[in-house]
Image (tube, rainbow, N blue to C red; front, side, top):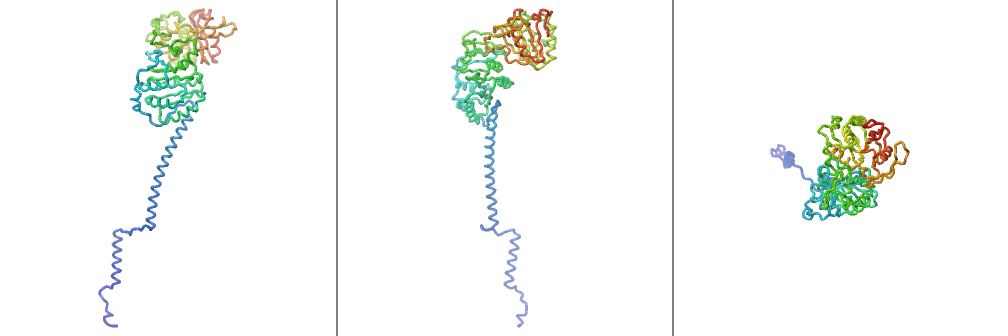
Length: 507
């Protein structure tokens, strides 16, 4: 070996330099965090792409699921509503149509309909009865923005009419009372189902029997202060079995400023039901009302029916409460003879008052309205329970009693009914004689003066004159005896029992 070959060289070899450069470049690349990008065919790139597509598809499915859930909720809501037709109220979901859509086209003009009568009672309530075509009712809805509710009594299957009424009544709630006996019920419910979706202010009430109507209306009107529109449709009374007295009681509950409309066919049917009719066919509705009314016709003078008379001022109570000083108050009253009690009868009245408070009767019947009517009403008010029906033997006594009941705010506890308009067909002569019970021929749609009464707890009897007993009182007393509760009591005026020393006797 030569000397040059054995000596080490200080210059690096070519392969050593290339290795160092590579190592240094790799070190710098790692320090800068740089990775070589994946190609389209790399597994990492494909995984990222699939993850993005999955997230996008998941978001799309979530949106579709949400929409399906909303649609399902809406359908379930309608199903529940259709299942609740049995007397319950239900409403739609969407927002109502605004008034702007109709304000120009349906500007209200004076009604061409004949105004039959104006009814005034209590605080001079203005209640109009009118004949009209159904389509004209929509104009009244637009004009009366103070209307809180529209009550339609009778089945309606006209889709266009329902949509028009619902659209114009956005400020009012529509209550539709329908009969389940009619053959067109299925058609009506189908039409209503399509209308409900756009109009949430519609409520349905199925009337399967008359008692359902009598119990539903007071609950519906409780707390209502704004005026109400009522439309009485043909055949509602015959379809539901409701008598005209139920319609009259409903009308008596309406707030001031309410209006009642009737279709002409209803008026004709109404005339056929009653023997006592006038030119204005709906006057009888008010006439049958338990509350006294004054009917004013545009073409005639006011017709007063059992309203406040001048004599009532002489028998008005003082500011003292009836129950607080009952004997003293009754003794100080200058009572007309038609009340049937003299001043010395105050002790008996006091006993009656205390008896009612103690026994807490639920149903009381009084034969012969008078000062006892106020005593009974005040006792019921203190008990906060019970109801009395007072059968007046004459219109004169009812007039005075009605005035006093209103003055003392006791009229809600007593319903006044007149038997002065009724004629006895057959009557027994004595309570001790077994005879056929008296039958009554009525001039109104009230064949039985005790209609609707069962489980009577107390009967209080007094008369205008002794001749009334065999003619009027005894037939009623025999009939009411069939409706007594197990623990009922009967209180009689001394005129009925001659052996009594006066006042009333309990037996």
